[in-house]
Every structure is written in structure tokens, then in C-alpha cells.
Image (cartoon, rainbow, N blue to C red):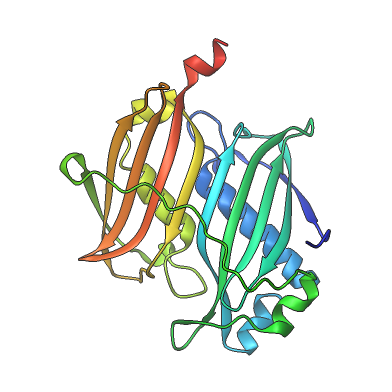
Length: 255
């Protein structure tokens, strides 16, 4: 594994936070992607260079473990490290630290290269990943699958994909899927629960003008936690699945 770790400090702005003054997960993901993009640019394989080859990076999965969510006006440090790659996938780790140096978030991610015109994944090109000095591993890494929704108890919200939902890859930005997933949970739940784990997998692209369904089911565990399962669909096509683990804020603070 390479020891080539890239880091960047970020001052959390109020508009990146929710009503609890906590950094939102979609904004956190945007910040992480910005940091990894800056590392790629520094190594000479940024988005502009990839675009010349007709390529772009896409995210296939995030698995995120959350110790605490940073809050407004804090200065955080985000580190990222390319771990390994195989013929189809690249694996990257992110870590987020608060001002005191405490680890707040650890995220494992899976990336792939997209042929922009054909809208298909392509093999990882050696010249694109060589600057990261990561090992090639023939074996695919088996990543955990998100929990499936329970059809009988699922609730659904519908959304129309707007211009500002799409990014430079001409599809919906991956942080928007988390927006849609979280929006199926009500105000009281979101203001009284702490997210401790997120696993989201992106299956099919969503485009401008699509109408999507955001579905969610919820269950309680014997340990007193809440698990929410999420699914984003266009028609009969599954675009994304996710599961989230929650803990009541009162329980955490009373320890």
C-alpha cells in the first residue's frame, strides 16, 4: 500500500450544515471528492487531463463509519489515500479529523473510469493510476451490500431531476442521492438521531428530467439502534441502494 496521503483543511461554513449546525453528509461527500480531485490535479491526472482522453471518474460505493459529525465554523482536516486497484475498480480511503485531531469519519470508496460518450465503464488505464503509486491486485475486493428495503413497510417520495442536480459528468451528482434518501425521514427523526454508519451503492445513472422514486423502510435493532434502508428508482430500474445506522442523541450524551 502506498504511504502517499494527501490532506487538506476546510473551514465549515454555516450553509454546509443542517438545523443542528452539523455538517450534512451530502456536503461532507462533496468536500471529500474535492480533496481527492485536488490530489489528482496535483499529480497531473486531474479531471481536465482525463477529459482529454474522453474519461471521467465515477463513484460506485461509499462505506462510511461516523464517530462524530463536525459542526459549523470548525476547521477540519480531510485526508485521502489511494489504496489499490484492479482492472475495473480503484479503492480510496478518506478520513476526517476535527480541530483537536480526533478522528470523526472514516470512508472507504470504490471508483471506476467512465467513457463519457459511450456512458460505459472502461478498464483502468495504467497511466491514469501510476502517479498514485498504488499496488495492482488481481482479486476484486468484496464490498458489503446495503440492506434491502422491506417492501411491505416502505414509504415513497417522488422527485423531478433538476438542472442543478446534475454535475459535469452530465448525470446526477452522487451526493444528491443521499439528499433524496434522507428526505424520506421526518424532521423529528433527523433532529433527534445521530447517523453512525452509511453504506451507499450506485447502480445506474440518473439524468436531467428523470422522475425518481426515493423509497425507505425502517427497523429497530435489539441494541436500540435504528436501521433505515433506502432505494432510488426510475421506473423499474434500481439506481441506488443504501442503508444507514442511527442512534438517539439523548442516549449518546447520557453515557
